[in-house]
Every structure is written in C-alpha cells, then in structure tokens.
Length: 89
Image (cartoon, rainbow, N blue to C red):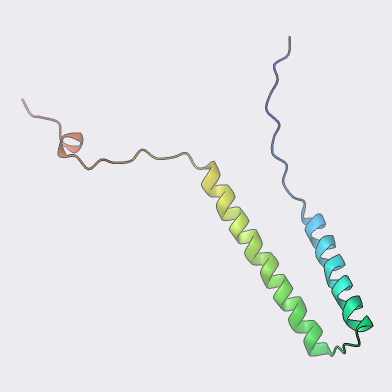
C-alpha cells in the first residue's frame, strides 16, 4: 500500500513573471499609442527602471515571507527567575 504525501507547493517560474511583465508593458504601450500618446526615450527608460524596481522589491518581499514561514517557531520566554536559575540545594 502506498502512502499519500502532501503535494509540494510549486514556485512561480521567473519566465512567467518576465513574459507577463512584457505583455503588460506592450499592452499599455499599445493603448497609449491608440489614444494618441507620445513616447520619448526618457519615458521608456524610466518606465523600464520603475517596473524593474517593483519586480525586485516583490521578489525580496516574497523571499522574506518564505524564509519566515519556513523558520521553526521559538518558544516564548516567560522571563520568570525560576526558569533561568534553578533552586540551589
């Protein structure tokens, strides 16, 4: 008889995030052009820098949350003196 093991949580693939980001950026660009917007190199550069910064911050937050969840919980110290120093004698 085989035992059923809980399913491992799958991680988001980086390629999914990159391609999704490119699709969102292309969609925003297409909508802006259709609405008569104009872009110059500085606008595109700052948009890419801003979007990259948001992705990096999201990755850092995700890694911090994942690390906190995988860390075993520590017992809370009650601060009682008898816990720290056993009676002598």
